[in-house]
Structures are given as C-alpha cells and as structure tokens.
Image (cartoon, rainbow, N blue to C red; front, side):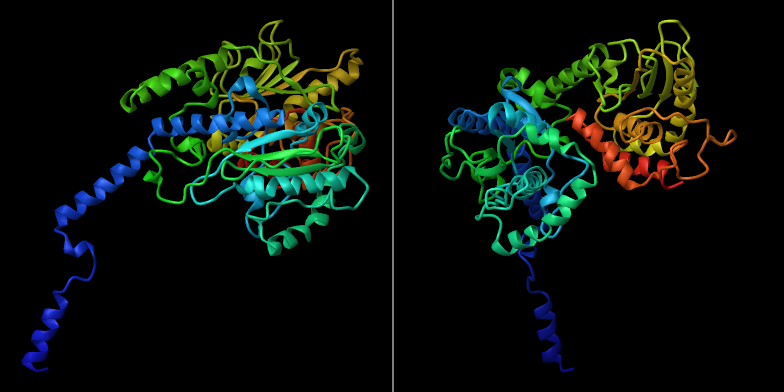
Length: 497
C-alpha cells in the first residue's frame, strides 16, 4: 500500500461516524441524562394523576350525555371513574383482540354486564390506552367479539344487528373478515360451558351492539331506548390521542392509568379518588410518603373489615371471599391462602381441626399473593381433597338438614382463592351442583389421587370440566380474575398428575 493511500485511510478513520461522536463523551452522557430526566419528569406520578382527572371529566360528560351507567374495564378503567359513579367492573383483555390472536375468553365471561344492561338498557365500558393508538384493542375488538358471541348464543337469528360491529377507523375490512370467520368456533367454545342460556336470555330484550366513543371524534347518536333494536354497549376510550412525544402536550399523558403497577407505588383508584385533592395539591417529592401512608391504611382495612362472601351457585356449600369474609359468618370449614393466620394460635403447616367450638376446621396455606403464591399452590392443592372429603362424608352420613358452608379465601378473594375453590368444585360436585356421595379414593401415604376420575363420580377431570366449573365461579363472582399461573396450578393438580 502506498504512503498516500495509508494516509488517506487514517484520515478517513478519524472522521465522525455518528452524531454522538461529534460531542465530547462527557457532554454526550449529560445530554442522555437530561433527556431521560425530561421523560421521567413528564411521566411523573403527579402528571399521571392530573391527566387521569382531566380524562375523567370527559368520561362523566359522556355518561351524562347518554344517561347510561359506567363500567370500568379493569384495571385501567377504574382510574377514570369516581367510585360513586361506577356501577360495576368488566374484564376484557386487549390481548384477546391482538392481531391474529382474536379470542373469546372462557375465563372472563363478563356475564355480570347482562344484568346491568337489563336494568339500564345499555352501559358504558371505560378503558384507555397509551400513546400511539386511538383506542385499546380491548374496546375495538375484544368487546365486539364478546357482543357477537353473546348475541349468537342467546338469540336464534342471523342478521346485521347481531353480527360483528367494529370501528372502521381501527379495524380493517380484512381483519374484520378474519375475526368473523372465527365466530362460529367461539360460539362452540361458549356452548361447551353449558351455561344457563334461558336465564341469560331473560335478562335482555334485544341483542347487544357496541358503539365507539373517543375524545377526538363527535359523540355518535343513539336511538331512543323505546325504539332501539339493540342494547348499546358504549366502548369509551377516555384519553385523547397524543401524536408526538410524551412531553409534547404540556405534561398530558395519554392512557396515564394504564399499567399502574409500574408507576402507582401501591396507590389504588379508590384511594386516589378518596384523597384526590390532597394528592393533586402535593409536589412530586411529597407523593411517595403520602402514597405509602394510604397503602398502609389499605392493608389495615383489608384485614379488619368484614366483607360478605359469594355463594357459588348451583352449589349450596361453596363460598369465595377475601380475608375479611372469615369473620363475617360462621363457617364449617375454611381454606385460607394468606401469609396472615386466619385464627390466633393456628399452626403454619398442614390443616387443623377446630381448636374452639366457635372456630371452623381450617386448611391454611401460608403463601403470598401474586405469581409466587400461584406457583406455590402447585405443591399444596392436593391437600384439599383429604381435608374436605371427611367433612362431606360426615355430612352425608349424618343427613344434616343444613348445607355445609365452606369458605375459600385469600387477601383479595379474586385470584388464589378462585384456584382452591375450583379444585373443590371439580372434585366434590356433579354438573347440577350437588355434593357427590363417595368413599375415600386418596392414597393414604401420598394423599394424591391414583387416576384422573372424580372420586365416586366416574367422570374424567379434563379442561372442559374445569372450564365449566370456572364458569360457575365467574358467573356468581363477577370480580373473579384468576391468573394464568393459578389456573395452571389447578390443571397440574387435576389433570397433570
């Protein structure tokens, strides 16, 4: 290589190859920190709460315009509705509306909406989404799928009114066609749950039809309730769409209530609305301490307040509740999943007979909430059968006049308690909700079952049976939302052994 060529290569290699190389290293790091700080300040808790409140004003405006009740699509929707204006909750997941993954969830049936619609002739489902989208997939596709499936399940007719209705600004004709091609299979899945469709049908005078509302478009008109050929399900996106960066609209955050576990520091919608003025008048530096005090108060309330448990029909024996349900009534047996002892002096392992005449028999699993607790269930669910079997057997042999009252509980009553109750429903009840009359079928050494049959029933425990029993729970307890990990623990216990 010539000297001239070598000099040229050296000169070329010293040329800047990126924007960052034009700045001294210290200046580049300083710029990066500055941009990160700007984004962090824009997405501060205070700005989020301010944006939530701003969006809530639009939500209330829509509710007043249509004169329909507000339902929060959890968990985001509750941030935008003051508790005194919220009539219920729904659980429609955006993932069930994602491109190519469209689904009708048999875990989240949302049948409680039908009762609300019967009383109010319609409803408004509130949700939001973060920057980059005008409408969450839960509202643009998951709810329309649910409406179409419910219509086909409950109304024996085929017309445009009960078909799939989706927002043309979000769902393309191609995507709509692909979703429609799956509706028959979704309806078949719903039918396999053996829901009491005649009772459900009595709740509605006509089919359901989604109507889509966002802050960026004029409010669509609805027919008068007397003349409407359908019940409107207003899918309300509370936040207006931000087209630029997070800091492009004077600290406004689109979908500020979304993914709250990542920013709320333990604050809940209920405590936000209860202490709204205090929180919004505080500076950023004061918020962590304020929120911590509210969170501590919430934990105290969780353990001290008495809350009613929910009877899971068609049984007359199985109840699900939070920890506050333990002392709300007299129970024959309690299955409790909590790090807190349900009764003083209770040992932390195994299950106990009543240690006082006023106390029930107790099976206590000292496990935490969340994924860790759900995973810990895998090694404990098999204890439910040997705990409950003699209780049911003694009731049958004594021909008790009153039905048993058995409570399944966890701190919230919506996740882990659902899993423990689901195991009992699969093992101890027939399809009519009657307790089975069986003799013990457990291996005395390992306390696990030797086959996949329901003891004494001769029926196979499979995913279809588990879904049917889960449908009992979600129909009776509308806030039930068992996690995937909890249901996997149930499947492993019942059909994975």
